[in-house]
Image (cartoon, rainbow, N blue to C red; front, side):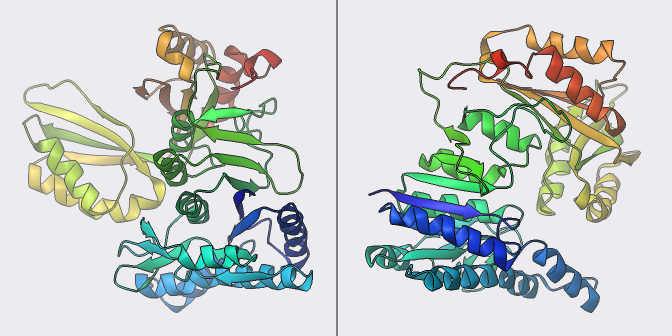
Length: 412
């Protein structure tokens, strides 16, 4: 008998009719003799509606109360799905994040899971029940309701799978699996059969939205196999797992893009030891994530520092950056939100020095300028103009043959 954790996103539980379809799918899995835990997101766009309501009350909702409000969406989904299963004769019980033992730190709206006390879930499974858990939420070490931020239901599912030593964690969405490019941007993108944790981490960090970064990090740390698949069919999706020798390594596995970032340039930064630490230390204290960083060559004791960050953090970062400029004696700063990041990812890149040159050549031939570059052992990322993103994605996808049968090898 297998222990299976399934996560259904908002589109899968967007209406009573869809919840009944999910209940039928869960019931079939339970009838096979598996112990099933289901993690659910809020129905459709209900979280957006709750956010709208909060901002009708005040432009700056209290973060503790915001968590209390937003946690309601998943609680509605879990109760309705449990009702649908019980109505079908499948004994089910629903738990909030706190009841399921999801313990987090004390950060509101972006809490991180620190422990999972899964005894209530285990007791229910031992009693033969299907367990429905509200995703995206937990209880802090101070006993407050917390939410986990974007993609938090994925993280809830993987954390429970790790705590329960589940055989697999199925992330069921409205797409068939992980593709080697965004099909909305690159029409001939292809579904991958398997990807390694490292490749999926790079893809998630580079803008691939099918799995969130934190859930993949958690899966890699605890050895949880993720099966990303469609909630509307029984077709196999994409396995995300540890790299093994039998897995063939494609030179390039996928491309990913991210148009949610902005570029900040601080001019006239004193080229002295400790200045970069002060700048990024202050930004980190504002809980703003910095992605790519480039520092120009020093000239007359001054340099320019350029980095990218989420567009959604631009407004609140401005005050911090102005304070930093005053403290270090920099000349000023500028922000550019009309950029996008394009990344090329593949475990096979470790042993091939020609990938970067081929990528840059393809972009140059298309007349697309590169504004920033960063790399890892299995990733090359470029910042381009947002208007060039679609063309750049297709050009790179075609240059590396990712739309052909040969591009998606068995075991990749």
